[in-house]
Length: 194
Image (tube, rainbow, N blue to C red; front, side, top):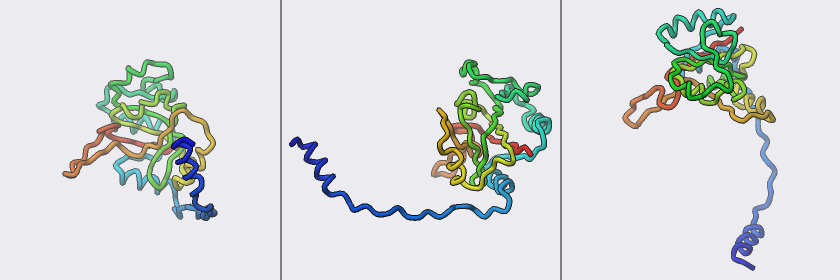
């Protein structure tokens, strides 16, 4: 018997007895209004949030908020009048000087103000991280209360890349110096479409 086999057989012979898994409570949060909770949390972590009725209202807010932006990219054809459309297959090196990136998110999470995005709707996975300002659009009816419901929603789905994004990129050191945009956008704005 080799030393490897001896070690593995020793481990196998000394396994603890199996016990039943504990019952896990349902972690449903008692938020009276998930949209209001999402807004409150996102603002608290440094994000901006606007409830709007249509795409025209989004464009109106963006024109005021990003009046000085020189390069605005979107993956949404409905924003062609305001932003340059980025499509899958375009050279990702052309994203190096993007001021504002506008994306759609699959859904939002009320407890932490995060949005869930996958490569399928991003077109290019680097897009929400290379821009100076990130804008995400979600449907009001897709906001879930907690991460537990979020993971239930994405369980069993297939995607090459997916991530939760919550607020602008921030980092701080021991001297309490906060830096925005250290490894991602300086600002994050979420539009909640009614």
